[in-house]
Amino acid sequence: MSLRLVRASLQTEEMDDFHLGRLLLLLQAKDLRAAKTIEGITKLAKYDFLLRYPNCLERALEAAKKRPEKAEVKEHERTTIETKMIRFRYGPWDKRYRRWIGLLVARGLATTFVIGKTVHVGLTEKGRQIAGQLSQNEEFHDTKKRSDLIVSAFGSYSATRIKEFIYEVFPELETMKWGDEISI
Image: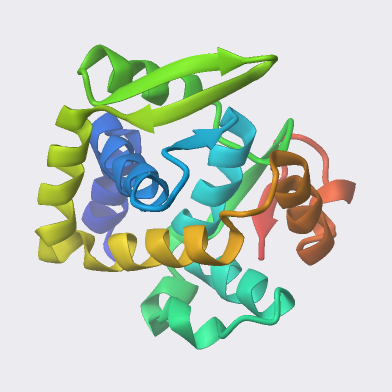
C-alpha cells in the first residue's frame, strides 16, 4: 500500500460528510421500518460499529444465528486499515457521534428528541430525500445493504441488549484498556 493511499484513507476518515452519509443510510434503514428513530446514541454507535466493520457484522450475524454470508464481506475489507478500531468508553465507540448528530440536525437532515434519558435520532423529510439519493449511488451500495441487514437482524434489540450482545460476541472488548487498538 502506498503512502499516498494511506494519506487518502486518513483524510477520508476525518471527513464528516463521509460519516454523515453512512449514518443517514443507517437512520434510513430504521426509518423504513415501523420505528422511525434509533433510540439512544449508544445504540446508534453499536449499529454503526457493525456497519463500519463488516467483518464484525459477519461475526455478529453468526452469533445471532443469522446468515453471516448476507454481510457479503469482501476479501479486501478483512485486511484494510478500516478494520482497526480503538477501545473507547462504551466499547467500540467514536467520540464524534454527538458532533455528527449535531451536524445532521443543523443541516436539517435529522431530528432529535429526548424521552426520559434517551436521545432519539430520526430523519427529517430532507434527510429521507438525501438518504434516498445516497442509496441509489453505487458507492453506497454495500453501506445501504448492510444498514438494512443490521436493522433487520438487530433492530428489535433494546439499547441495553445490543450493548450486552456486542460484549458477548466480542468479549475481548471488556478486558481492553481505553485507547487500545481493537483487532478483531
